[in-house]
Length: 138
Image (cartoon, rainbow, N blue to C red; front, side):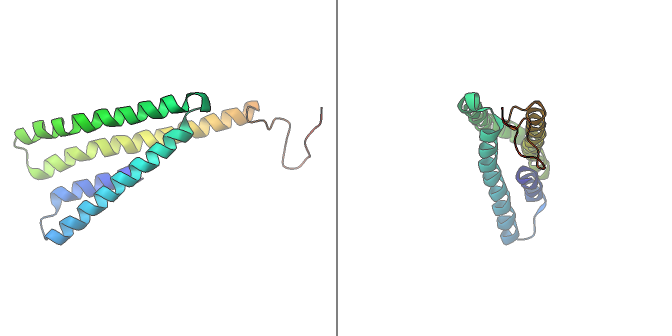
């Protein structure tokens, strides 16, 4: 949700022309959502990967973020060299945030499916237990 809101605020940056205070407020909100979303994404990545591969998975996720921080300014420079209108540049800048929001949404769906599958098979250590009956002793 944070990345989706950040995309909205980033798009608004290109539209606002009224006052400097309004622009400053929208930039603050965009930054707040991007930074908050990134912190939440890091925490979510830690809960997404299985324990045995968690450090590798989070490391790869952070590494891909670093690649994006290199490619982003390069792509921004190329887009600016095309002399596009400022509003169009900010609309294009919403694409990574929308991609991140979609990816996190899909990760959440995959996590829920994995937990449901593990519960069905009894991988969570709760096989044979129900809320209405006591555990069966072997």
